[in-house]
Amino acid sequence: MQKSESLSKTNTPKRFRMNLKTRETIAAYLFLSPFIILFSVFVIRATFYAIQMSFFDWTILRPFKPFVGLANYKELINDDVWWLALKNTLYFSIITVVGTSAVALAAALAINQPQVKGKEFFRVLLYMPSLLSVGVIGLTWVWLLNTQFGIVNYLLSFIGIRPINWLGDGKLVIPALSLTTIWWGFGFPMLIFLAGLQGIPEQLYEAARIDGARQGQIFWRITLPLLRPTLLFVTVTGFIAHFQVFGQPFIMTRGGPGRASYTVIFYLYEAAWRAFRMGYGSAIAVALAIIIIIFTLLQFRFIGRRVEY
Image (cartoon, rainbow, N blue to C red; front, side, top):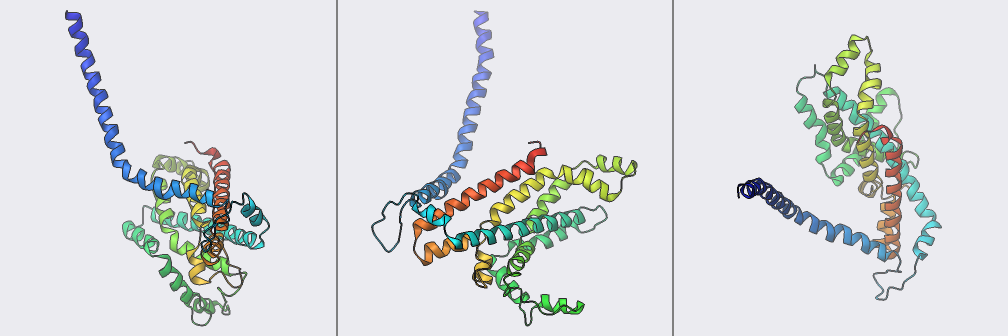
């Protein structure tokens, strides 16, 4: 009798813990359910629907949508405009990701110095451009880069540089769009780098200084290796975002001059909403998604190989 009572006493807290864990799990899923429902309807369902559309000659103005199999993808492979748009997008993404990472890291290092006063003010100040919409940024930089009265050319005139047609020169338009995007978007990566810097133990820096290490050696041997996970996150998310660039070329150049700033999403917009070829536009979207996945895996392969997860 006493043995059975002792067993019941020991089992009761365990059952209570199990019931408590079950209730917490149910509560967690209830809180997550609005996001899960919206994500399933507007992302997962839309993704599979787009993949399905890419196998049809899906034209809005025609009620009948014939099945064409891989015809849209075969056309895409032979489409010179697609390859031009992909090259422009890749060029833009590389310049913008490298530039944004460098500027954001430099800003984070400057703000993180112990002798800097008013760090909170500078964080807010440098992050503020990220809060503006792409429309505001695009129109503002169209004026700043104007050949006749833009402030950028005005400042360059002080060092003897003649006015540059930033948005009208096919060789300069992508770097100009990248410059605009770097200024607009480096605030968020700066905060990420700042969080990474503040996670590095100060004892490592003190030990390096005691051993006589210079500031450059400390950066290359301590700071940068320990920031590798942060750098991986910034570059991966940056490439994913910038491969989908649309607003800047749409507002600032309309894809010009010629098609020098024509990007993949811009071409998708032209194919789907100008030519009403939804099937071909879906094929472009699927191809872009595959390319983004490949580049993401390559970044994990080369940047993340020394990262401990």
